[in-house]
Length: 366
Image 1 (cartoon, rainbow, N blue to C red):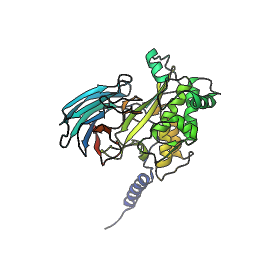
Image 2: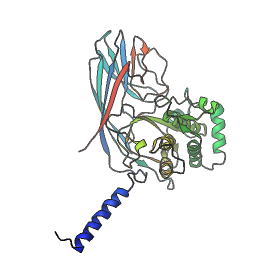
Image 3: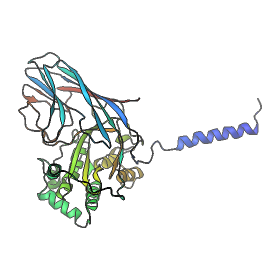
């Protein structure tokens, strides 16, 4: 078979194209932008592994709503519980399915299907859109202390020190964000997402933790500086479209993909998304791991996660100090995991030997 110069050139072009694709990084610049809405179905299945006596459970529902980026679609369920009803936290409006089984019920279980639509967020912080306002009740709620997020003492002292040279609320918020990125680290040994006990963190000087710790620190320092702020407790439901392995779900099973984000309210912009905890997650977990702060991927995440975030995540609620209806136990710091109780003993939601649950998420393509 003869080979012409044209054949050789064509082969060369083809090889060059393949080589270019092969050499192209498997990730894109991390720069979330509002785009098309994506609809998901979330399935949460719970089972009490060792049933005995009185039993009940509480399953968080994706009920948070913001017309700009998150729209809940409601929930339906199947269960062998005696009663199943949606309960709402009176202070924050967080919703949960409260299940109560007959005493000693064999194989107690429930499956909840929830739908929601979400998309990425990004604000141009060089172009104010305000003035934006909150009601007096909202300002009081998101400026006030919680049990684990005080706004006085060492929290206030730290906030004042960080923001002493800031000339605006935007400068204050950015100063707090940058300080947290520099001062904290993600501690892989912390169970779950952490607790968010920020006074203990600051008093001990140990600023390691996970998202519920690091982002709660942002919320507390912002509130202490006079800016309404809140944690949003939720779940990653899809891979990152930018190829960041640490910032997305690995597959449809998202049982352990809980993630807390944060917002700060600025009069010029409204609610501003921030996520310093995910910057530290990129540092620790993005392959090959233990990246320096000046690494390109870390720098991109650091820039983007003050003012934007990716829409591969759902928001359950913004609630702190949550009392579970029907339970005799003290309140939870937040509601982001299914909870269950057997014979008045609250089960460890992170221990699959006593309380089994699975959560799956799939995108609904229309």
